[in-house]
Amino acid sequence: MRRLLLRLTAVAGIVAISWGGMTVSREGDMTASSLGSLQGDIQRGAYLARASGCIACHTNFYDGGKPLAGGAPLETAFGTFYAPNLTMDKNHGIGDWTIDAFAQAVREGVSPEGDPYYPAFPYSFYTRFSDQDIADLWAAFRTVPAVEQASKEQDLHFPFNIRAGLHLWQRLYFEPQRFQPDANKDERFNRGAFLVEAAGHCAACHTPRNLLGALKDDAALSGADSLPGGGASPAIHATALKERGWDVNDLAYALRSGITPDGDILGASMGEVIKQGTAFLSADDRQAIATYLMSEH
Image 1 (cartoon, rainbow, N blue to C red):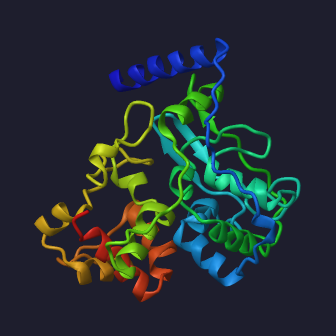
Image 2 (cartoon, rainbow, N blue to C red):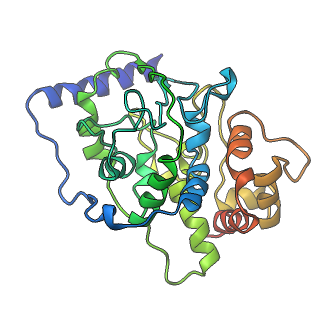
Image 3 (cartoon, rainbow, N blue to C red):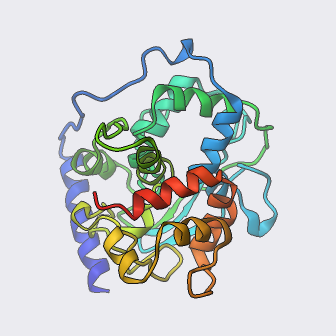
């Protein structure tokens, strides 16, 4: 209860500042400029969407929902979030979007109407996508059949249901960037870095957050004691994994099978990540993820 009160106090302050006339804008936003000239690859885009958790979050598997027509409820300390309809329906989905609007949403966290998205949408990771990644994703999404199903409204506690504070939240905690491979590392390491830090957004669940829901970067991948829907996540940085006796092959195998080195089964939210995400990745990509996570960096 004390943590919730602290959250409410902090967010109320942010909302008050926003309403007080403070204009929040980020200089140097990395907006799309020539996306329309790029040829998207549908297969690569579909693969990237799977690696990025789009299907897992935006499909309500529990109620037999149609692909990407809207996700199951995501219960958090701030209230309940609902992933919206991402099909090509023009009234309820993204059928009337342009590729530039899509890029702005995915990489900048801003809707076509100019409203900031809640960080439950992991745009702070997707901001690392290249223009070609966006073109490929857009090509794939354009093939998704339209589903005439309205997206559910977010059901958040006061004052989190007031979007005005999100402008300042983004100013404080979000910095647009693009993925840059490490020239001192090999291709496998860099591929793993992209999948972990961008597409797979592993830190979203495996890094603790502050009272306003921002990641504590100084504790990256050190685990979190409060996950959406309940439960906790373990540390998955190299030191912690090695202390628990994992190696690269163990981790790559677990990302395919959901089975740990001691024969236990990874369930709950991680089970869903595997079932709807990493199990579909290539063996090389699972090995790349494991290589990156097991490396000191």
